[in-house]
Every structure is written in C-alpha cells, then in structure tokens.
Length: 479
Image (cartoon, rainbow, N blue to C red):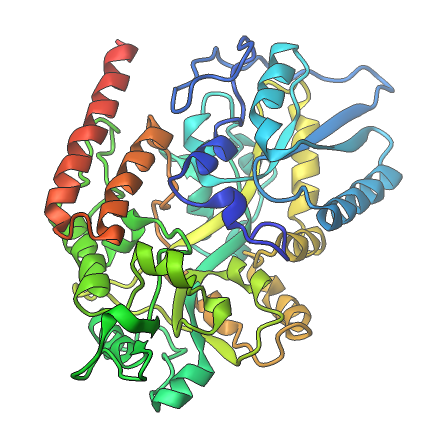
C-alpha cells in the first residue's frame, strides 16, 4: 500500500501501464528533452568525476518524490520533519524534498536533467528502475567499501534486491512481503482450520489450499464447492484470490519450478510458455472454472468480492494490504504461503529503496544524506509513514510495538518470516520493453479470467509470440 491509508495498487501494481509510468522516470539521460517512449532503453555517457563544493558553499541535496509512495500529505509531513532535523544539524549540506504528482513525475525528472539541474536522490524507488536506468544510477559499491558500511543487519537476501548484474545501485529501505490474509469468521463458520502461521510446514501446499478453499466457496444456498449441488452461477463467497493484489506471475511460477523470472540472463529470450508457467496459469484457470475457488472477471464485476467485503476467505497479497483493513467488521489474521507442487516455497516481496543519480554533481553529499536516512531511527519513521516493514533485523521489535497499537491481535511475525523466502531475482526486475511486454501478458491473462480461453498453453504460446517480437525488435534497434 502506498499512502498507508490508501492502496499501493494505485502506483505499484505489477505489469500495468501505471507501473511503467511510475518506474520509467528515474535517471533519464541529461540530453533528453522529453521522456523516452515507454519501454525504451536510455543511453548515456559515463558520469563525470564527482565535483567538490567550494569552501563555505552549502550543497543542496534534492530528494525527488513522485515515482511511488511518499506524496500523501501525512507522508510529506514526516519526510519534511526529517529534512528539518538534518538541516538544523548540518551547515554544509541541506536537504530539500521535491514532491511531484505521480502522473507528472517522469517528464519533470527528465526536464530537470535536461536543464542540468538533476535531483540527487530518487526515494522511494522501485526495483525495475535499478536495471532500466543502471547507466545513470550511481554504483554505490565503492562507497560501501570506502566506509566499511555494514549490511549484516539486513540479512542475506534483501541486499540482493538493490543489485543489477552484480552492481549495487541501492539499498532496500522498506519491504512489503506477501502472506495469506484470512477471514477468521468464515473459517469458523465452515469449521476449517486456519492457514498455518509457521512457514514451510510440509503438509501446507497449494493442493491443500485448494481443498480448504473449496469448502469456503459458497453459493447463495450455502452449498460449498467441495460438495454436490453447488451452483457456480449463484456463487456469493470465494475461498481464495491472488488477482486483485496484482501479484507478479513470474514469481508465482517459481513455486511450480520456473528456473528464471521469464527471460534469459542476456535479456534476449523470453520463456513465457515454459512448462512451469503453463502449469501455473492452468492452475489459475482451474481455480476459477473447475474448482470455483477464485472469482472470474465477470463475478468480480458483479459482486466485487474483495477481502474487505467479507465475501473472500483467503487473500494472497503483500503487507501493504494492511492499510485497507483497520475498519473491517470481521476478525482476520495472516498465515504462511503454501509451497508449490515442486516443493518450492517463494513469497514475492515488493520493495522501496533509493537511487542516487550519478548526474548530480555532489555525490559524496548525496551519499551522506542516504546513509543518514538508512540509520535505524530515520528508517523506522519512513517505513511507518510509507506503510512498509523495516528490512533491518534490529528494528523488528520496535516496529511490532508500533503496529500492535493498530492491530493488537495480528501475528506480525508471519510477515517477517516471509522475508526468508523472497523472490531473487525480484518479480519487478528490469526487462526491455517492460510495459509493453507485461501489458501483453496481462491481456492474455485476462482471457483466462473471463473464460474466453481456458487453455493456459494456448494463451501463453500467443503471449510468447507477441512479447518475443517486442524483445527482438528492441535488440534489432540496438545494433
């Protein structure tokens, strides 16, 4: 969730034009007078040696906010307060926040670079920006080495998200792990056990989820989808959903045995119709049209069975969903995601971080600001206003204390345990023609949701053909 009170889906939903608009602005080339077409690569010269301010000159470090969360009034208040605290304690470096409406952020960033006045930091920023604009993102590896910066508080997996092809461009500042939200009242009425809170239990897999979800999927007569006499035409309760959250399909397919995020390491070949993707998409088709545990597109339009309505028993989604759940009329909690048929357990994770633009002339000053924002006290304040969980181990108990005030019965440990299974590479990783490729995938996916085509292989063969064409065209233009 983005505004911590409104849905992160407004700016961070996977694979849509909205997601592309939110990521494509970071570090466009300085010579660009207008933003490049959606999905295009940016070519730039190597950054110059960092400039040093003249004696007594105050460096202004501008933090650009607009690519994702951070623009809501209550968020601006917290961020501005942090800037004031820094400014009161430093005479040589001043922080200024710049807030840009989401729909204008891309053109604003490009215009500032073209004018030779680049913002120093894009924060919070998403994963795809790390790879797409790698030529104008600062490689912070030398700074980490110079300062002997300690990353052990972040664990083994989370620092990997800030890398592209082995180069560290950023450090994750807020995480949004995925879990299963479940309606305790519906489970109690069906006399079913809640999903386990412990991760990796051998009996908890997608087959087990299907069986319990059938018993939680009811028609208007109260007959469940596991028994005879169930009428899907009169369905008014569903056992499971993953579509409304906009989960990354490439990470979901990893649990079915996919060996990559859908493309080769050199970004030239797509594998959207590999067996694991076909099997995972067929699972979605069967969940809607055979098992009746997930709502079809038509049912969503007619009944709007979101988790908040009380018509959905299990919602597979990220931690940002909590921003929508303080006023619910039923009891709910969170459980572990099941393992796939291969035994693989993966819990995709959305992240927010920072990127320093290497076109900013005073990179040392930008790095000092970023380091300060990464300190536990500042990180916790940012994460609480962003609606993120802190990636630092040392902040977990303090975060839990704060969140218990809002959700006293919620098992927050489930979210933190999810971080042991995050998707590496991340589901939002860079691929050329990102927006067009994922929009084409979603168009095929929609055929399954509507029932226009229930055969997953037929859908993905066509998606593969279209998307590989986009990729081939892109690389032909680079020669």
